[in-house]
Amino acid sequence: MPKRLDAPIGMFDSGFGGLTVARAVIDLLPKENLVYIGDTGRYPYGNKPADEVRGYAHELAWSLVRDFDAKLIVVACNTAASVALDELARELPVPVIGVVEPGARALVRVTHNNKVGVIGTVGTISSGAYVHAIRETGASVELFSAACPGFVEFVERDQTSGDEVTVLAERLLAPVRNAGVDSLLLGCTHYPYLSRVIGEVMGPNVVLVSSADETAFAVKTALEDEGLARQEGQGSHRFLSSGDIAWFADLGRRLLGPELDHAEPWVAPKLNEARKGNES
Ligand code: DGL
Image (cartoon, rainbow, N blue to C red):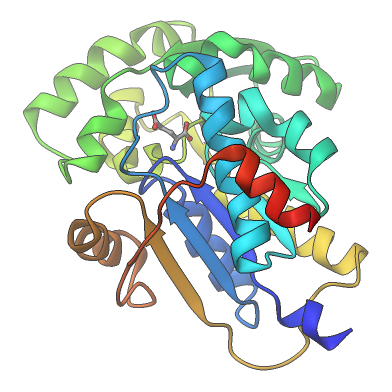
């Protein structure tokens, strides 16, 4: 079915963070078409109640399937994946990949002292998703977690270095640094943009792990397993935002690269409409 192969991978995040995953997917799978939605009109997700984030995740995922014919969905947001991945995987008619399990797998692979850290939004850390995902790997590691409220806002303001963010990082990372972890998972897709500051605060002996590459490999495997991998051509990439389009295109290009040459508006459909559209 050549049409299905040409259908895009659908990906979403609350804003710019998922672009770290988009970058990895574009690099690993250059033939694949991609539609990315950054829900900047409603970001941040990390401090919102789980039910609200779950509702957004359903709207975005269903819109990608219904309006863009996505053949696979990547939930490129830890907060959304933490609270909605299982439901989305059950409900959607296409494969769904999150960032939590791939990140957890990568984390337990790199540790030598078996003390690992995870940082993320309040929503992600309080959901317990990483405790569960690390347990599922079967690795006997000790996990230390810290929520880092404020990090996402710095990225969305394009403030990824300087005293203010460093002072905040010193304070928020203290628990994982003092625990003696030798590897730290950036359990929020925005955080790789702060990796310089985080790396300086954690010190040279701590390996920072991002889920982006591992997630891209999971996408590749799923497409191949489902017979959905595009075999030829150069992928095209569309980027949409529910917020300020000019800002999304401008900052997004600087964060992702030249593939983000312009952005389009995305308007959240009512959830029931999104689901119904798919059934008809
Ligand atoms: N990039 C997101 C994550 O991975 C969301 C951050 C937010 O909107 O608070 O959790």
